[in-house]
Length: 289
Length: 45
Image (tube, rainbow over all chains, first blue to last red; front, side, top):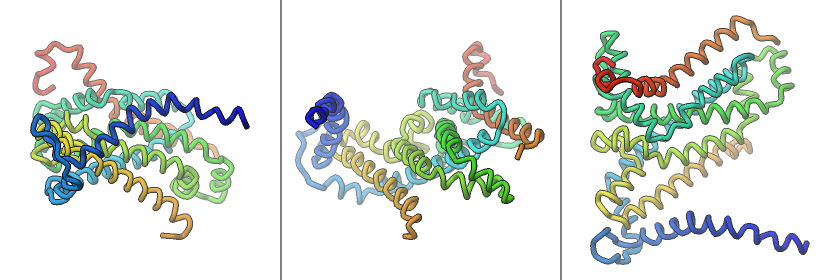
């Protein structure tokens, strides 16, 4: 018992690092969010919740929330459906699984900015690869990055391209942990692949699904680099997510206080979404929904 | 229950097709990197 008492000392180095790189910036952002602070302007003045009130009345803020929710839901939904389908395919495959798994994972190890550059070459109007392929069939392609709807679709595809491999890897590992005897007895009862996947495997890996969805949703909420390279939030503000708007407030309009308030609200929104996800996935088991 | 050879081959081909589509941007970027600028910017690519 006496030796265990001193163990907390081992937490001190990591605790210090976490405080320095996580808690201090977070605390400072919360602190700045209560100030009217223009970079290079007058000294900051305390305005309480003024920045938050201003954001609630800002049409561009509500627009960026809508676009963020659309892009996060579209990208994570597509990644999950595709990831689960491919992971189940790999699970059923009896040969060549390892090389396929390895090759499928390659897009995920590309740096997001570099990946976005690859994709911009592909989606560029008229001389991009995709347009060349489509035009070879005598079909006139849409302006992928220049039309609001298609630009959002392209951004969702870009995120899905890079992060579906992560989903495949985690879900495939999860499917392999499902008790084989349950699957065999279901097969003997005449259950098909769809029934086995939805009635046995998915419920069995629910904690893992929650984990992977939570990770991806949190990640997608701070989706910035690919959008910055692909569309820079445009055309107009068609792909301006919360992080893009935070960037614009902080580094274009130099409104540091308002940008900090937006950062704090993004954090709260992300936490709220994860909380709801946990509630829906777990409370339903107890008959609450 | 053993899966049939035909279904396994079909599944393998489908997963190969997905992998090829998935790797297209990387392959294309690599192919562009070994081209001369005049060829890299030619229309159609």
